[in-house]
Amino acid sequence: MKPYVFIARKMPEEIVNKLADRYEVGMWEKEEEPVPKERLAEECQKADAVFCTITEAMSGDMLRQSPKLKVIATMAVGYNNIDIETAAELGIKVAHTPEVLTETTADLTFALLMAAARRVEEAALSIKQNQWSSWSPFHLTGRDVFGATLGIIGMGRIGEAVARRAAGFNMEVLYHNRSRKKEAEDRLGVIYTGKNELIERADFLCVMAPYSKDTHHLIGKEEFRRMKPTAILINSSRGGVVDEKALYQALQNKEITGAGLDVFENEPIDSAHPLLELSNVTATPHIGSASVKTRMAMAHMTADHILQALSGEELTHRVV
Image 1 (cartoon, rainbow, N blue to C red):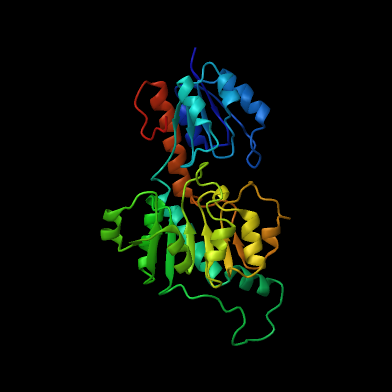
Image 2: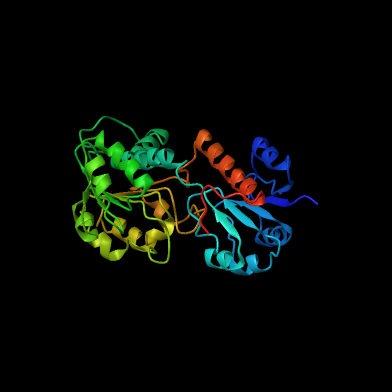
């Protein structure tokens, strides 16, 4: 009997066929709706491998009730939706997709930075709503990017890629990381600082830290109080790294000038969320890696991890 692979989100035929050539494959077919928790649990109970994304919560209880499960391959860099400790305890391999989405996510991060700085969303909306009555010297004036100070919290692959883009805008780049990266300093010209100093000096504060219990609400009320009133927050890492209630208050009270957000604490974010009512918030629906080329590369890598695991080979990017 062939091993059974469950694909938790609808994938292109090319990806499905890559696995169906060797295994029995089941897939959640609805394009815009995530698989219900109950259906996911049922599929896990009979699956040898699961192909998932960030939207599927793989809890410890679910894993304990999945006796055949050998590997969970997630089409994402982050894996906080998977109970890693339980997976390790049960001998279930977990793989993710780093590196392949680095440049694309850095592109989106810098696009958010520029859009928030120059109030692009507000300006576009003013035209669409017929609010542009005449030219005015200070109408919709924003913040300069060229020559500004960029602070990056989390100097991983994507953080470094954002720093490379900032160099083209003659930005001073400060960074804070769990460990100092002198090689990156020499190569990129970035400057290591303490977290508080970085927050106080940055014109643009870019959060690139992975989400964990240690980084939950890493940026909150105290950090917003330290920021310049002219500063702009950019978050394209994970929503839980930023305290959204504190961010809302900081924007409302003009403690900071604006925010560019691609991620949120609860996704999909409700359109009635208070943050989305603010004109100084530029928001996108978690599209950091959303280019056709990158998403296909991520899907192929995820399928390859399943092929490797079920063939007894070493996983290219194994978490546990």
